[in-house]
Image (cartoon, rainbow, N blue to C red):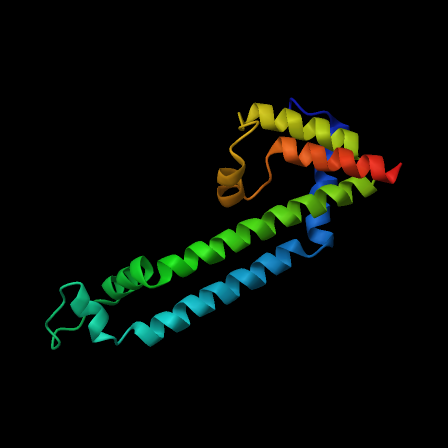
Length: 160
């Protein structure tokens, strides 16, 4: 708060209001609920699978497997690849939402202040300026600062 001026804070709030106005928060909530529902539904289908447990050395059929162990085996084997794919899709969706919220702030006339505010926050948080594009695409829910600034500058030119 001390590094950013009031008008830059307003621009950042404009960006955050863009998330709300475009329904990003509700969409993320719905997707998270569907993800959790799918996870537990598929787990319920695998819960009674003795073959899964035997594959990991639980050979005593008469002795029940603790639910936590069953869940850990399920998450570590069956659900892990599904989780990676869905996680990547969610990262791409999150990045798309960030660009949309940036554009919302730009349409409010706050582009320059948003850009300067994001630069100051980024420097304060010691964020990577130019991370590897493939790494950042997979791991970063927000686009790198350089990409966001470039996109905002292109939108600024189009709007003029």
